[in-house]
Amino acid sequence: MTIAIPGEKGSFTELAAIEYFGVKNNYSIVPDFRGVFDAVNSGKCLHGVVPIENSLAGSIHQNYDSLLDSDIRINGEISLRISHFLIANKGVQLKNVQRVFSHPQPIAQCKNWLSRHPSVESIPYSFTSLAVKKIKEERLMDAAAIASMQAAIDFDMEILASNIEDNKWNTTRFIILSKKEKVLRTNKTKSSIVFSTRNIPGALFKCLAVFALRDIDLFKIESRPFHGKGFRYLFYLDFEGDLRQESCENAINHLKEMTTLYKFLGSYPIGKQVIPKYHKNRE
Amino acid sequence: MTIAIPGEKGSFTELAAIEYFGVKNNYSIVPDFRGVFDAVNSGKCLHGVVPIENSLAGSIHQNYDSLLDSDIRINGEISLRISHFLIANKGVQLKNVQRVFSHPQPIAQCKNWLSRHPSVESIPYSFTSLAVKKIKEERLMDAAAIASMQAAIDFDMEILASNIEDNKWNTTRFIILSKKEKVLRTNKTKSSIVFSTRNIPGALFKCLAVFALRDIDLFKIESRPFHGKGFRYLFYLDFEGDLRQESCENAINHLKEMTTLYKFLGSYPIGKQVIPKYHKNRE
Image (cartoon, rainbow over all chains, first blue to last red):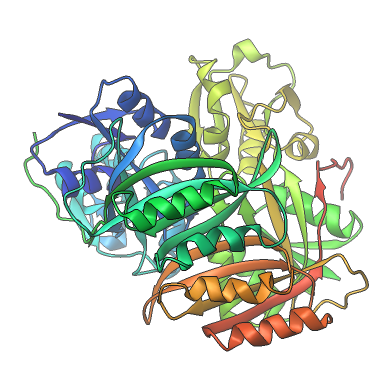
């Protein structure tokens, strides 16, 4: 079973995939999020993993768009605590560090730590773990990288500072993709849908009534202004349960009476939130 | 009147500010979004401008958090079409370009164009207009930058390709900040609030009822899982109207009966969506 992962080894998406599928699986690195959808759609990979929302940066609309454009289903989810580490070559001490390489997002997320070290210059880099690779290969003794602890392990580097992120509740939710619908064996399930309504007062309220009147709990709701063929709002909704339950099935049939667009993205077991484990001596 | 702008001159936020306030005002560049809030809060600047949501990247929670943490009000809004341009030194032709410098977000937003030019390497850079400055100062004749047309004008550079972004509906909504509430002189207004409810089925539905039962239209709703003191959901809501209207005032009083947190962010005239104009010979 091959699982498509975007970007790079040692990324948070790879850590999420390993938490979900285990370390023994065969992971295939593809260039970007779109590449994950392509690999699953073509059958090259049975599954794929992409981030869908971060507690600071919000929903990743690009991946919602790819779900809307394809018949790929969400089969599962897992949420990861995001922690950043300052990583350098062995022998480098914190006082030697004059430059820090990382992706702009981790740089922004470690602003407090960086402002307490004003002599350290931040230099943007394409991927966090490639920044670790760069300072290792170029044997830079005045530089460090901000990346995951896994990148420090993979490249056998020193950790100069741990958990340097400003917000200790920085969490990313990842979704597991598949061409098939998940076979559900638990009752702790949720379902994700996207829909659009006519833009009239109270339309969304009536749509939510189909869930509230049946005591179906909501996990997520988000409106997104959407410009495609004309202007409309897309609504993202995650609700508790799945279509094996009569109340959910009826709610969806009721909802469809009122929507101008409706897409079922998948039903899946409610995921855990984990602090990632790190893995030594990966092949 | 001084207006705080984050990051850099020639940015989309500065273009939005100029569209809103006019080119003749006094703009003060501060390092980042937080700096805009600080400048307004300290009274150093009467107004500030920050992005609040992008049609592809979603809500900017960091700026919602700064609104929640302060007593700064939203006084207005303006939405800007985001277009990217390939910018190079005079004399450089497209066939000469081997490297493109830009912020990772514009690089990601121009992926289709870049994939049609596979020999061009993308190199991440901290700010788009600083990338233009760099290739000018270093007189690079094999490089280009992806930035706004304003950056090409400001640095007197050549535009090699226009509107190279993948998605032609890439729009960012900016908000105008002030310590004072906006004095409203129009009826075409909207209001922004943040609230939290007890996490029980139907709680959100009841909250939305206070608007639906009064035929008050919603522009935006978004739930955000929030980890601070315990876990809860924050809801962002933009609705039509303002508290001069009895129906809106009653709706808010009704809403407050059900919320565990409520914060009014401001009432303001409904903003325009504009394609930015560019400005020659700025001081």
